[in-house]
Length: 156
Image (cartoon, rainbow, N blue to C red; front, top):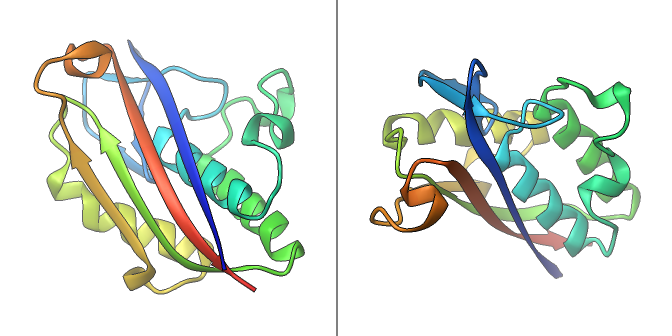
C-alpha cells in the first residue's frame, strides 16, 4: 500500500464556468486555468501520482501544451489513473476537501463523489469529498480563489 497527497489552488475570475469534481456549479465566477481548472480533480490527480511515485500533473499535462487548453479535468483524471494502473496500482480510497468561502457546496458533494467514482471505475464508497470555509481568512476566505487537498491510498 502507498499513500499520496495532493493540493491545488486557482483564482476565481468572471466569465468562467465553475467546475469542481467534474460538476458544474452555478456561480458568478469560475476558476482560471489552462484546462477547466478543477482544483478538486487536480488535487486528486497529484495524490494519485504521488502515491504511485510518479511526477506531478504539470509534468504529464503541461499548461504550455495546446493539447490541454480547455480540456475537462475528468479526461485528465482518466489519463492519470491510466498512468497509475500502468505502475500496477489500484485505488483503495480517496479523501478530498474543497476549501472555499463561497459558493456553498454541500448539495453538490454527492454528485462530485459519484462523478469521480464513475470516471475512475471504482465504488462511490471509495471516494469521499468534503467542503470547508476558512472563516473569511486568506484568499479563499475572501473569495479570491478556491483550494483543494486530497489524500489517496493505492494498493498493488
